[in-house]
Length: 153
Image 1 (cartoon, rainbow, N blue to C red):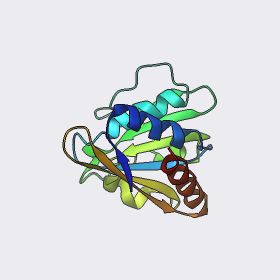
Image 2 (image 1 turned 60 degrees about the vertical axis):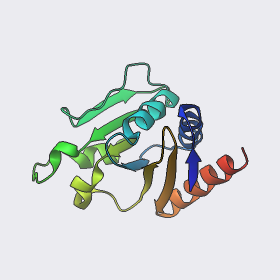
Image 3 (image 1 turned 90 degrees about the vertical axis):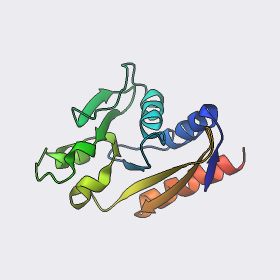
């Protein structure tokens, strides 16, 4: 469990996480409304070198950005609850990009088996607790690296 006490610490978490990303990495963000999923997505985009303003793709569902070294796909699947619509997610998962998904539970049956889940739990004020759950060897390694790096600070 990673304790985040303010936006600066969330920024440090995003920087650590993003520095370990490779093409085709998939990150699923979990948390209640207002937990900080979009804020974390914006920070990830910033550290990937995205210059454009990153906002929630709630109405578009998917927004893609060009970063310095990697492309960044940001998805918000909240509006897909009870939807059977195929939006071609496979193409995004196979792209040489980092993909971050908010509300991934609404497309759970379409997700690749290997990914990193990030659970954000809100405490009082700005305090958050982040739990990382890895699916697959690639993400086990990434999870351990991030946790080790942040525990030494």
